[in-house]
Image (cartoon, rainbow, N blue to C red):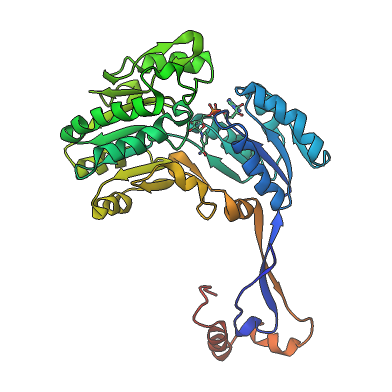
Length: 385
Ligand code: NAD
């Protein structure tokens, strides 16, 4: 948080140059429903740490949590600096008509565009934490049971309603055949013979999302699971095979406990498949061969990357959380939150006297003065005068 001194050149040697991190002012945080405490409070902590005031807009979809936040936060925070505003799309639209100094939005790419367009009217900077379809490449050279454990864990966590979850698996037909029994065995071990009665499996947030997911169960062929119960908004941990690229399950973000396996001939085709699509929020590669994992990392782009690993890297505050391209812009978590919510102000304080030293920069210009200035600016300078 302290002013950060930076190097000077001969022209500015007598001054002090530094970066001051100052608060933007009033920050608007708009949150989604899927981790309704984490995705409101973690950005809020960053905005406060950087010295801002905040208007917090939780999701109306996770209605119990939004009520708790609206009730509890004013008890602990200075109400002249922090406000919780409740409402859905209409109220958020009205909120967005106001001028804020910074907006951090977490949600879908569709609404992200609405937020960015509203922010543009006031030239308000934004961080957009969006979603999308996260690919998960599984190499032939792997232990199928280990991969099944790791992939099932982070696909079915929170009933699949996680922005970083693997949205689909890409592997060869042979690996698919080895993965299917391993996934079945993992699902049974995690959730028992009757996953519906498991206390470790969540439910779908609401009827609208339940019906959307139920419709996706009709894509391709169900290899594992596929059961659903509307009265409980329950969708079984499911694996789909034989899905077509044009089917809805391969077009929209799944955001539920459904995992399609798409077959490819090998690494090159998998990378081509990934690169034909929007840059994802997260990308995963599983292989016993480190070079294969490195190739996926080197030849693709995504907000984050997990090699033989799921989203456990979210627990590392030293790593930024953020998307790229269609999955978002900017990042936060740990120190990145502080930087996101701070304006980095470039400062140079020079002595008020010793004016004689400045004469070299004033007209009338001479070749000698120009050469002297170039020399004084030093090799680090990238300024073309
Ligand atoms: P959403 O975009 O529907 O809603 C997010 C927020 O925007 C809510 O507070 C909602 O009230 C508001 N909103 C909705 N429609 C609006 C409109 N027309 N105008 C103005 N505001 C509007 O997203 P969601 O369904 O709550 O969350 C799921 C999405 O969020 C998924 O795409 C998921 O991947 C993404 N997500 C991303 C991250 C991340 O860290 N990148 C984390 C969680 C969720």
